[in-house]
Amino acid sequence: MTKLTHKPGPHSPPIQVKMSMYELFYRISHWGPIVAMTIINCITFSTLQVTSMWSPFFSSWSSVICHLLFLFLVGSTLYNFFCAMFIGPGYVPLGWHPENIDECRFLQYCALCKGYKPPRAHHCRKCKRCVMKMDHHCPWINNCCGHRNHAKFTLFLISAVCGCILSSVLLFMGLYRAFRVNWYFLYGDHQYIVYLTIYQLAFTVFSFGLALGVVLAVGGLFYVQMKQIIKNETSIENWIVIKALSRPRLENDTFIYPYNLGWWENIKQVFWYPQENGLTDWPIVRGCSPYTLTVEQLIQKEDKKARKKQYTIVKSYNGSWFPLSKGIRTCLNPPCSDEYRIPLSIGDKVYVTRWRKRWLYGEKCSVTGGLEENGVKGWFPRCCAVEFTTTDGEVSKVAKKLS
Image (cartoon, rainbow, N blue to C red):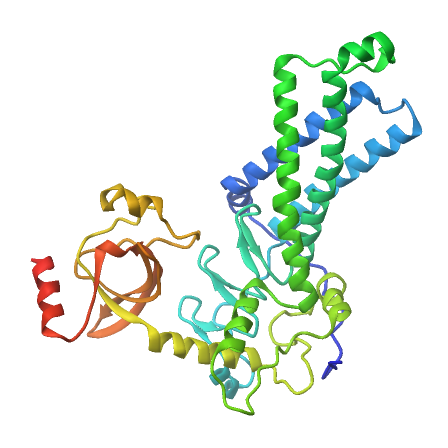
């Protein structure tokens, strides 16, 4: 059994959400929230319309309970959806550093936010800020899932799944009655016949498919989220732990994940008492330090730098997600990621750290005042670059393509 070095802090203070009208419009106008709201509205409207035909609200106590339960799940889904979107994950203050300056050597420095990343924080290139306990950037809420909204995001997932399960059952029963309308008209109760026009039938079948799709897709995401919450990991930390356990180590050097306090304590930390500032006061396992994970990240980052390769750009690339000019095979084999695509010009230098058959991921290097500075990171087509080496043959090859 693992033990805490100190008990979790008190409940977080009430979160004051202050958003300008521009920020409010920016959050809602993204394609993710628009599609999510469209799906919720379609399923809700279709379910209420069809169910009211064969089981009107006040026809029985079971009908009242069924309707109220469905409306409660819809309300819970919407409430947690907007809370997750507008509350946000919590951002690290710009220019942040620990109180003890000597501890900076255990932390990563964010050149974009001009400050250090506290434990469990990561920089989101879409939000353009360092996010506290970042799990992932979710396009459906057009925001990151992190420290302050992790519970609301998870409750949104389970509410949506339960609501769509109930909706699927109600829509299936309504469709069954609609297809057997003649039998119900001759032998059943004439008062509760389900009769759908061709357009209503198509919309109901479409909504039924949406509901099943949400159950499968969102249900899978909820399973992953709960699996990580039980271990007190985020998606990013899970990947760090995998690499930490697989990399070569000294004989007596074993990696212990510092935040796994036991499944019940882990769940309470997310849903009941999230840490007050989300920066440095994380409860840890006895035998670990507050910087166990950040030190591991620094080691992995240095290892990544040691493995990177320099490429020189020989064909310009405008940053398109489907660059037809680079070949149909390149368009049909994009990286399965929503990460940035970096526009490049002939002669640019890129340090590549990830490789795919037809795409490369790297960091563009710019030169300022004779010094190299790291720039934007992202994917670009492999055909646009050649690997740079010090051999005369490779240099001649690059020079020939550049000429």
